[in-house]
Length: 301
Image 1 (cartoon, one colour):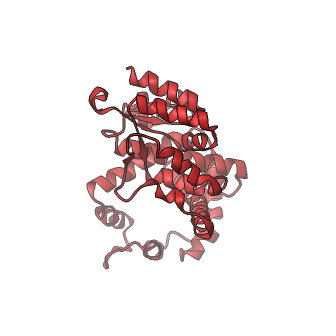
Image 2 (cartoon, one colour; image 1 turned 120 degrees about the horizontal axis):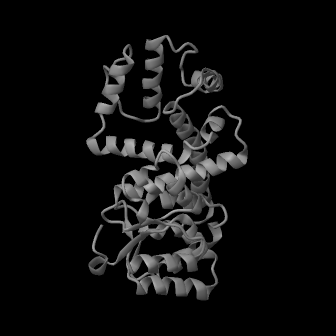
C-alpha cells in the first residue's frame, strides 16, 4: 500500500455512501465532503459504481444534485478505467431511464448466471443435480443444447454457438468432441491477467455465497423476490471487491456493508479477502458521520 503521508488516502466508497450524500441535508453533505477533503481523501470511480448508481430508480431526478456535491471534492477521483467520469449523472429523460432499465435487466441475468456458475463449483447431491437439470432444460433448449448431455459433440457445439451468439469472437477449428481440449482452447484465448481476473472473481463470489443455499434456490427457480434481490446485492458487492483486489496498489481502503464485514470475520473456509491479507483494509459504515469517523481512524494508523 502507498505511503499515506506522501500520497493521501484513496478510499473506495460503496454505493450507499453516494446515496447518503444525495439524501443528506445541505449542511451534513457539505461538512462530510469538507472533512474528507481535510483528510486528503481521494475517492474512487469504477464501472461497477456507475452501473449501480444508474440502476437506482429513486435518484433519476436528483442525480444532477449528487453530481454538484461530488464536484466539491478537492481531489479528482481515482478512475479504474480511462473512460470513466461523473458526467453520466447529468444524463436525464428517456435516455437516462432506458439505460437504467438495461442495467436492471442485466442485473437479473447476471444473478442467474452467477448462481449457475457458483453451483457448478460446489458438490451437489444426486437429488440436487436432478433438480438443477430439470430447471435448466427449458433455458438450455432455447440455446440449442440437447436434453441428453452425453451427446458430447452436440453439447460442445451448442456451447460454442452460444458464446458466438453473445458476440464473443471465437476462432474456427475449436474442438467439439473433447470437453477438456475445448476448455483448454477457450482458456488459452485469455491473457494471464484476464485468467487471474476470472479466478479471483470466482473465489470472491464463492466466498460470499457458499455459506447458504441461495444460489441453488435461484438456479432452480424457487427463490423469493427478496432472496434474489439480496443475492444480487451480494454479487454486486463482490464486483466492488474485485475492483479493489485488482487495484489494491492504488486503493487504500474499501467500504463494505455490515453483512460482508461480519462474513470476513466468521465464515469458514476463510473469505478470499482474508486469505489474501486484504480484510484489514475494509471498513463498514451506515451513515456519512460513521464514514467520516472510520476514515479518520484509518488515516491516523
